[in-house]
Image (tube, rainbow, N blue to C red; front, side, top):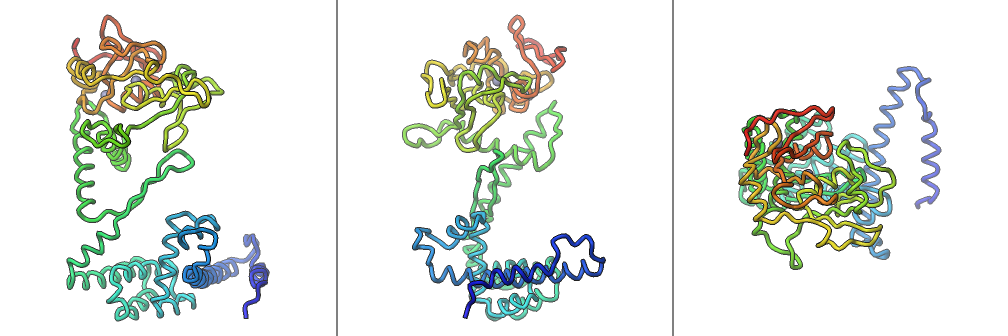
Length: 409
Ligand SMILES: [Zn+2]
Ligand SMILES: [Zn+2]
């Protein structure tokens, strides 16, 4: 029989461990920690078995949930990806009797169980004959060693059936990109070998091309460079003219901003308080200076708001740099006009010297090509740009002018 008060009794038992162990001796604190670690693994083993039971009963369907993972995520505040993995491991445990037994004993950790469950997912048919050896490895080896043993076990089987294995790998491909509350977008996934190779080759090509661009002093870390390369890849797709339309138009980034905000944002990164609306469709709120930059090139569609929910006449108030006009700017500037930079035009935005939101014309004399890092410096980095007798003059945040390395265009 199951006593519905079990939870309270277990919780009371846990009070045997003080919340703050700092007053204990070193020996007590170490021994207590080791016990708690083992207890938490034993609890996890039990929890996963109960999760498998919930999954089997599917009682969550009564509340309209489509899967145990959806129910777990929503009802208990578990992240969606983590919930899916927990249900997968719980289901796998039902098919791994030896692993289950030693996991319940606390002799195999939940991390080791995940590694073994993953091996079983790839080789479900061969798993029963290999389970004993894998459990032994899980009980005796550190995690790194266990991964190696599991990898070798998989590999030996793969060689027997390489093609089938390739199919299984391909089935595992997945990719997610989700906005987080901070406005960053978290990217996660696994690509099959062929798709992964295409991505790696494209990213490498972008990183190499950037490194070759002379005059660009790259202070970014390698992970930052790769992140920018993914950005570039997406940007180029969004700018390609031959991509398919969706609902009659080519998908584009949209920034929604009210005119007041667009005008009040200043290049030094400060804006008047009390701005109303300034956001991207998916990633959410952004700084007004960034909105100004994105709206500047007009390849990003700005939806300018007159009030919180009242768009201005989009066609009249916002500008579009037509393909012909962009060609003219490219012909004149060739590449980024920032002093000392000569990144090619494909990496550049057409920057409005006087922003169109302040009445600047979308015309050759008011447009200058700037590569994206330099466009960012001008809008968000405090640098300023003005036209003097048809030539761009760049100023540092302190107001002093930068020498333009190139002659007049
Ligand atoms: Zn600009
Ligand atoms: Zn540049």
